[in-house]
Length: 151
Ligand SMILES: [Zn+2]
View 1 (cartoon, protein in one colour):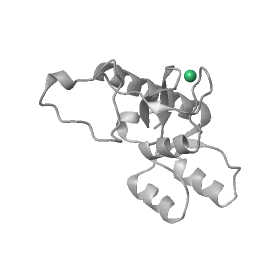
View 2 (cartoon, protein in one colour):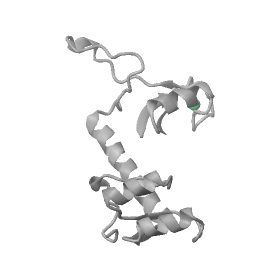
View 3 (cartoon, protein in one colour):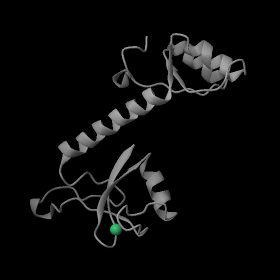
């Protein structure tokens, strides 16, 4: 996920969250990015506070993501908030099946069990095996450990 500071022609400033820079560009072109205040789709990225007077700093390339103008600290804060929201979403929308993950995922894939969203733990080999069988699942890095109950 990536966050952009956006601005509409009426100078309304807001944040937009996107899966990637490409997704943002595509949604922008399709007019899907609109101002939450006035609904205008003529959105552009707000520029970070100009730093031209500092001298010696490398100029930004066009299309480079621009960090929040409040500074890196605020930017990291937003990232952390997103992560927390993401965890909450997963916890609220998946059933914890713990070590039975691979077995349950397989049963669902082969129609022996109703489809639903589950979370749990699999070994690297199990995950690879599921992948080879065409069973959709994705792994989260350890720092994203969702809760203590995932064994
Ligand atoms: Zn606006």
